[in-house]
Image (cartoon, rainbow, N blue to C red):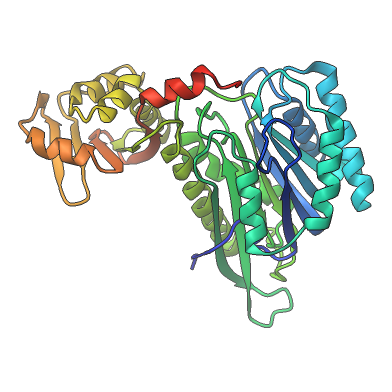
Length: 414
């Protein structure tokens, strides 16, 4: 059974974290974070599909695909190290080399992450100074993990971290041991992933093979991070990393058995919670928007329908204005791409205490505008659509579109 626990990236045994104020862009706040494992980790990762990839993405992808073990992740906020050419890659190599020497590990054991403004170069001396400071501050406490999750924020209004625990057979056959899995992420804008989120880091003390670690991550991303959108923009820096150091003492997962299924369930739980929190914290957002599509003909089509609705600017504006114009939703379903019969679908709006039917049998249904407006005033606004075609379903998450989103992005660089 999966148990939700407090914490994030330091919830798993052997992992510590730290953060510092390196002055990379921001003043008066922390802007660098580090995750460190006492022992080498197997690693899996997914990265942005944007053709313009930031230097840390290229650096991390090479290491993840090489099969190397890793021990450290160094992240900065404020400057993205994207569109920086050779200088950007040189900075990655210099950062990893310095971190490696500082900790006595190979440079290939160091992964990197950056988020912020695209274009400027990051001063190397601020990065190396930050690494030195964080080495002395590393801690396995929950507070250290939380502080690290706050240090990687840019326009986020809340930090994002979740953790779970579950039991697996012990390696020595003596019964079971408790395994932990925790993560942190950041992202409020440029969120329309085609792989994962802007920046996400998940750690676990589970003993699991590299091959199954990769397979597990790939299995959960399509229905978690790939099902959120804030503004339809896919970042140049999207990175999701999963590190496993095996310190829980469980019998190593090397086959797709019950232990693997439980591990995937735990990973899905953390990634789901991080993804939904990202959607609800969209830049300027006042509402989380959820769209569940069920009885679709295929899983992929269900995903397409759901994301089309939460990604619609008109639907997002409708929710901000609390205007129950169900035609906006029907329109988004209609241009999503896959075929369906508008004469048979049913569309619903769900509140905490009441559900309204918007559309049935090809007609907009009579409903109370007053009740609809009250539901649209709730923090989480949920829709569902019965496609009446098959057994597949999917859920997507987004947020409303507000004046504040334009204000934030109108002067982002300043």
